[in-house]
Amino acid sequence: DITIYITDREGKTHDIEIPLEIDLNLMEVCKASELDVDGTCGGMALCASCHMYVESDHELPEASEDEEIMLDQVLFVEDNSRLGCQIKVTEEINGLRVKLANLGS
Ligand code: FES
Image (cartoon, rainbow, N blue to C red; front, top):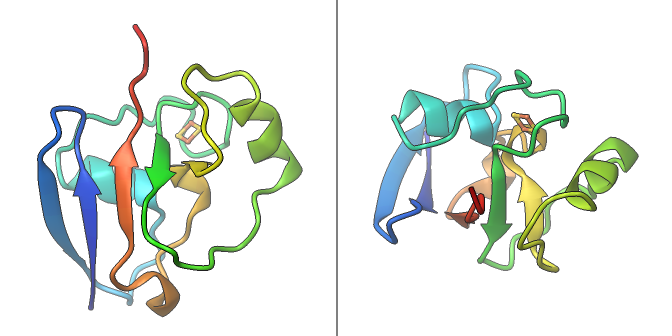
């Protein structure tokens, strides 16, 4: 298992243990942990409900063109913005810190 730290929209940080045996992405992890992430598009990089900021210095795989296009359209985008559904849970993200973005609604 790995542990990651997710700060919710109220500013509370949750330590979350994730098994590596199942294919998961960070949107699915948030949903499974009952954090306030809708995942409306089912992880297709089309809704940005999983917009989050990467706050640790982990080297993540680059965003795809689809992800970049979606991020261009969201509010409160920052240099460290990513779509959680596009970040796969792997050993490499052990210790990752992310913060859910303000959705501005
Ligand atoms: Fe829709 Fe990530 S779940 S963009």
